[in-house]
Image (cartoon, rainbow, N blue to C red):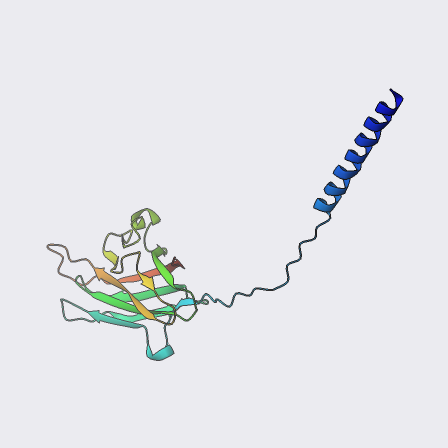
Length: 192
């Protein structure tokens, strides 16, 4: 009987040693990964107010009453994502069309998400659509013609047009004059 117990005990010890050897071999494997990856993409979407790349921001004024808006200007801020648009509108019916070139000088395609308008000339509540706003006086209307969702491919150019109009109401004949000033911030994200 003792021999039978000894054989069972030796068999059990051999089984434990075998399981330990298999377990050690399974956990002792080493996985080595060698290599590297690099991303060479750049993001550079910005508005232009000088003659960069042969494109230039313009402000063209017109009037229904023969007087031209005074000193319409475009001033693009640092980083090229914000622009200040100003003009002295002389008479009802005066308007200025600002054309601002936008370049995608990066290597990633961009999607136009719209603009954000701000400034002391109107309350933010009137700019909720981000395509139009009216001054707090109710005399000046700002309209953006570009519709969100378009793609600006890497290396390509596009424009945003903002029209500023001194509204012409019935019976309003004299020239009152009003200064229009708005800050626009262009919003782009990576196109997928």
